[in-house]
Length: 303
Image 1 (tube, rainbow, N blue to C red):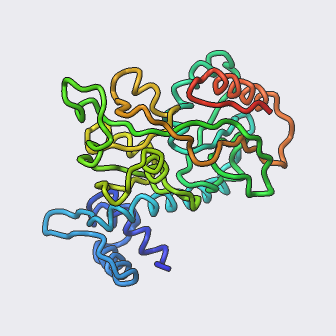
Image 2: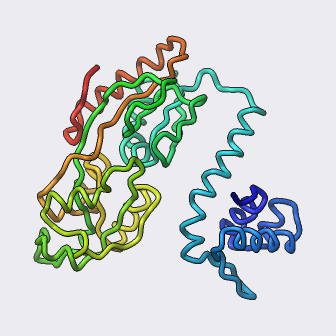
Image 3: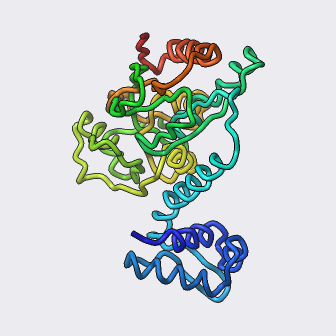
């Protein structure tokens, strides 16, 4: 296990792309930061940074290592801040994945806040199943099976997945692709975290295509990141129907195949069992149910 000191030094250098700025931020010398980076690389046996006389760049391994290290360093900082600062009892805390929050909840939230001007909402994003900030949310929305006895779970919705691409990926005279043409594109993905077949495995199997005949490109931490890569025509990815609906409506993304398959698992509403009754919580949950029930890309379960 690398030391926290070396991981903190790596996170600062990777973020600033500078040993000097990293040293200034964490209040040590340039030499001390360099020593910690070398110790980290020796400890894990992988080069993380490319150093020149004028710049610092992440290696491919560093690019892969940096995002989760950044998130966990930030998590430690936030946890410490919570001990040092009082809670905000009047703020409703809503936690879900970055994909759900960014690509579905946020575009709708303004309407809720306009209708409920006395309710303040804080949105908390997580990137992994079960990475719950259990002391810091009133409402959680997760695509994970009920596994934690500290929470009450209610089935919320199911949805479908299918490939999407940028309009530039298609010829000007085409509105779609043949299955055979898919072999000419890089397939971008987000890894599965629940020992399930990943999105591409599930869709390719339904399409009768072999994974071995495809060209796979980059693997991304989360769906907002892979969405940006697809929008920039760097490849094709599998998307969840609710999270790409607006991009499809606006023509920013194209659905090149008619075939859709059910997403692995279903989504749940999670609430801490040790929670006092809160009318604002109930108002938000009722609004959330209405929004999901009205969304044609979701199959809603009413409790």
